[in-house]
Amino acid sequence: MRSSIRIGSAAALIIVALILIYHSRHGDNAWSSSKSDSAAHKHRKWNIGTNTKAQLTYQTQLIDVPNIGSIIMGKLRTDDTTWVSAELAEWRNIIYTVDDAFATLHTPKNKGRESLPYLQYIVDHYEDLPETMVFLHPHRDGWPAAWHTDTMDYNNVDSVRALQTSFIQANGYANLRCQQTPGCPVEIQPFRKQARTSNGAEKYYAQAWEALFNNTDVPEKIGAACCSQFAVSRDQVLKRSLSDYQRMYNWVLNTELHDDVVATIMEYSWHIIFGQTPV
Image (cartoon, rainbow, N blue to C red; front, side, top):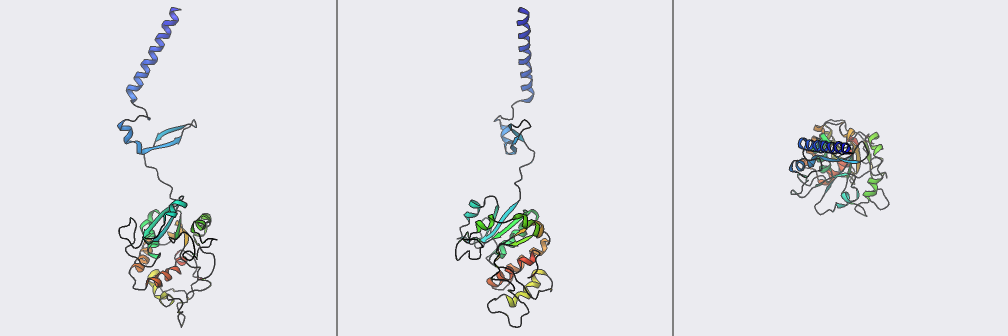
C-alpha cells in the first residue's frame, strides 16, 4: 500500500516538473494577450484545424481579398451611390467623383461624362484588374434617369445581379443593354456625305478614331446598343496595352470637342475597344 502511494507521488512530481519545464521554454500560448502576441494579432487568421475544431493559427503574409469583381462608375458629388455597397456588397466598388477635387477618388476634371472615370480606372489598375469589371452609371433605378436599363424597374441592382459572369469570361465583353434601339443596327457612318444632325458625334468620329486607336482603319459603319453600361473580363482588357488606354484617356481629357460629343464617340467605341466588331 505504502509502495503504491510513493509511486503515485513520484509520478505526480514528474508531471508537475514536466509542465514547469514546458512553460519555461515556450512561455505564453497563442491565446495570450501579451505585447508580443498583440503585435502579431494583425497576422491572425481563424482556420479549421485537422481535427475539425476551430483553432487560431498564424500566417506570414496578410490576407489577400479575392479580386473577383468590381463595379466602376463616375458620379457628381450630389449623386447618392450608397446603394452600390449596400445592395451589391459582393462586388468591390470604385467610384470616381468627377466634379470634386477633394474627393478620395476623383478625375482631374468633369470631361466626357462616364468616359474619363472608366478609362482612369483601367489606367490606375491595369496591373491588378479583377476577373470581371462592370462599368455603370451612378443612378440606381427609375425613369427617366435609368431609362436605358433593361429591367422592369430600370434597376441597375437587378441588372448586375442578373449578369452571367461565366459569359463575360467566355466572350470577354457584354453590353448591359439588350434592346437594340437606340444604336442598332447602325448609329454612325463616319463617311456619310451628309452627317446626321441627330448625332453630333458622327462628323467627328473618323478624326477621333485615329486619335483613339492610332490608325486610319476607320469603319464605314458603327452600331451598338447604347448607353455605356457594360461588363468586361480582365483578359479582354489586357489584350490592349496600358499605353493604348493612356492614349485614349489623354484624348478624352484634352480634346476640345464638346462633352456630349466626346461621350457619344466613346459610347460607340467601347465595344470595339473590347474586341467586338464595329457592327
